[in-house]
Length: 265
Image (cartoon, rainbow, N blue to C red):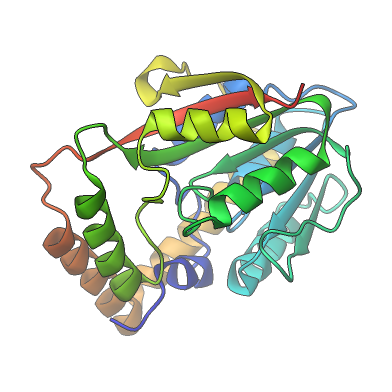
């Protein structure tokens, strides 16, 4: 297939495209716990669905940075539709590992299924940049799907090569294969208080329904209807599913969703 799955999802305004979907976002919110006066950033915000949920439930100030122009345009439309321009500022990155803000800018940074799909040492470079823009004692929280300890390097490399060819992105970084590799990398960069939680261990934050997140859900619903009623979109979606079934055996447990929380110190 020639299509990039992220561009496809972005063009349809698909929300919560990370591991665990909207439920994982509520779990992320329980770890981030935005407070009034805090400056919080999402790296790789996709179509902006989580930014809306976060901002609609708190009085913190939110910023987002995204490398995909397709995602950026879709998020901008969502934010405008939800009338949240005054609460959320987003920017398109020219370089995915260079964030155009000063050192020590953000109280908290969060990411959903964006760090692990960086290839090779890009994952290390991105984490170093995120540490730079965090304030002293600031927190980084992310949700990623990583390889289980019983998954070897060759298996991960083979799956990543097929995923890159079929979807335009890897499944999960193979240079930092297992959870201990991630922990060691974070400690080597200088992060402190490295904590990891399985998806099932994190209770979701109960979300209040309001006008902003209801409009965001409607925005996502419109995109879903669009993807289901377009012949080209149905063809692409069917092709992606067929390729994934071919590449990864559903009966094999190779990966797991993990939340990681660290402090800059």
